[in-house]
Length: 265
Image (cartoon, rainbow, N blue to C red):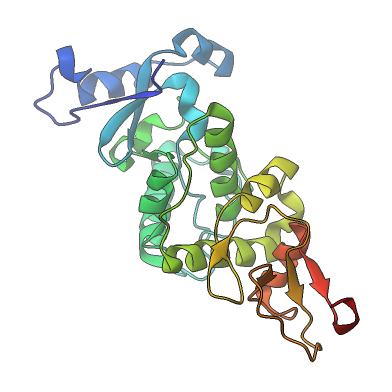
C-alpha cells in the first residue's frame, strides 16, 4: 500500500481524482476531536498535507514520517533557534502555536537552506505550512523538548523502519558536511537524549569525511580518528578527517569511532 499520493492542493481542487479539496481537509481536522487511538480508525486515509518534491497527501498511519521543526524559543535570535526543543507547546493557544511553528519553518529555511530538500531526498515529507492548523489534531507536531537533530534522526529511523529510506549515493560534499555539522553541534547539547536506534541510523549515513577526501558510512570497527598528539598521519580511507579536539569528536565517539595513537599504528 503506497504511503502517500500526489495532490492538487489548490483552491480550484474540488475532490474526485485529484483528491479532497483543501477546504475538506481543513474541515475534517477541525471537526476531529479524538485521541491518538481514534486516529487508528483513519490510519489508511490520505489526510496529511505535505511536500515530497510535489504536494502530497500522506496516509494517517505514516504521520511519524512527516517533518516539522521544533519551536523557536526566541524568534528574534536564529542562534538560539532550532537546536532548542519545543517546551510547553501543547499548552499554548492554537494561534500562538501555529505562528511559532511557522516561524520555526522560516528559521529552518534561513539557517539550513539545504535541509528540506535533503530530507525529501531521504523520503521524508515536509508538512505543508499552509495547513499548520491541522497539525495538532493529526498529531504531527514534534514532542516537547525534541531538538532539531533528534527530530531529523527520528524521521530517518521511521523512514528506515517503514522501508522507504533510499540508498544515499548522490549527496554533495556540501550537504554531507552541513548535515554532519548540524548533528555534531546538536549532540553537544542533546546527546543524552538520542536513542540507540537514532545513533544507529546516523552511522548508516555517508556523511563522514575521510583523510583522503571521500565520504563514508560508519559501518566498520576499524574506522578511527587520529589523535591530535600523534606524530604519524596515515593517508587511509579508514581514518576520518576530524581532530580529537573538534566539535565533531563527541558525536563520533558516541557512534563508536575510536581514537588512534602512534603506538597503535
